[in-house]
Image 1 (cartoon, rainbow, N blue to C red):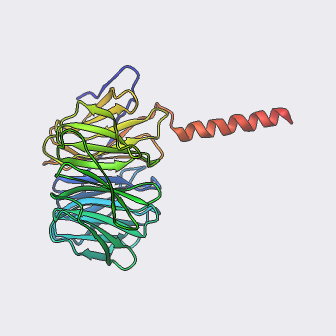
Image 2: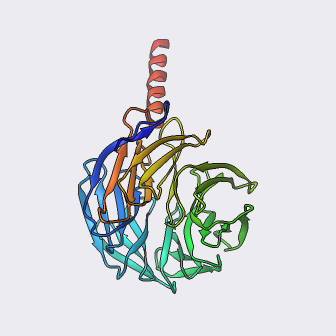
Image 3: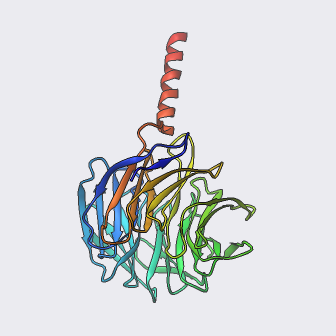
Length: 335
């Protein structure tokens, strides 16, 4: 199948497929340093792949049930995983072994994330709570009675002072990390179940996907919904959406139940490109921190991870380098 793209959009094309998992792949995450891609699967393993050549670096197992989510520490040395076995684990990448098991949830652990300082982990569960953990000791510091349905998503803002959580109860809630107080609840006229929620890189906005097939961009300060993105299919599964900010234009990237990755222009909300990943539901996507690369993973028999690259569009890093070179040349001329 050809990728579909708008006239002026990005031009992502398939770079490679990563094969190795034996059941549905639930999540993919690029490491903050950009060298690795980690994947978690219903086959109970976490795999770490080299971004440059697609080779499998390590495979880690230890959970007694499928893995729903994974998260990297800021220094790219540790991974945390959330599992249906009601635990979360912290793994050391260098030794590929579990350092700690976080046991306190009473039902499936569905989502988790490190704070930017990477001394805390927030996890969300089907037990309807969000829990805060001390990474060093593995102890539960706080239990936030967050929602009245399973918690599907948790994410820290850029300085770690706030946590946003999303749930099947249709609410997105913002919490003060230090006190555990709920600061605000994002409400729309209707409250469809929330499938994924996250802060923008600058912390000013919140991106929430919901099971009415829409993605909403909220302003954190005002609690107002600023933009709505639609076109993808999302009515049943917790599908991730994310900000892509490596190119000069900024995009919203999401999975879809029709087997596609959708790329929307952040500002205009126009659909810019669709990337075909086969027949199965595209559950997880991740955007590379520095390059124009997207990873996607799907449910189903194929168990493939797709890596997409846009090697024609400049990145913001390219632009910075170009400006630096120009400045140096100008300074040279003036000497």
